[in-house]
Image (cartoon, rainbow, N blue to C red; front, side):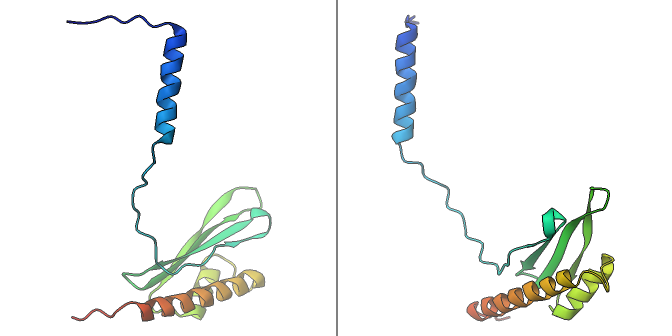
Length: 137
């Protein structure tokens, strides 16, 4: 048996407001997320948004990746060729990244910033490794 209930606009508005109020009062339980404990450093940003370089560390493969994008003279952006280094030799990473992207002998500030960020990241990686128990085979 079906019942038909007639509501006025005022009744409907009152019910909707009550439901919204009750839902707002109910505590929202956020899903538990595992915090990202990988060592990280902030990106390098070029002047006036001309470039961005990011650094990521892959804890499983012990791999640092440097990648980014640069604003070209015509106003378009191009992806910079990324470079990954397993032994984490800072000079190797900087030299390879600079030469692969046509910055060799240019952009001394970028080179200095790369070296600085990679040194900071390397220190965090070393600390991270010391804090993790070694896996026995």
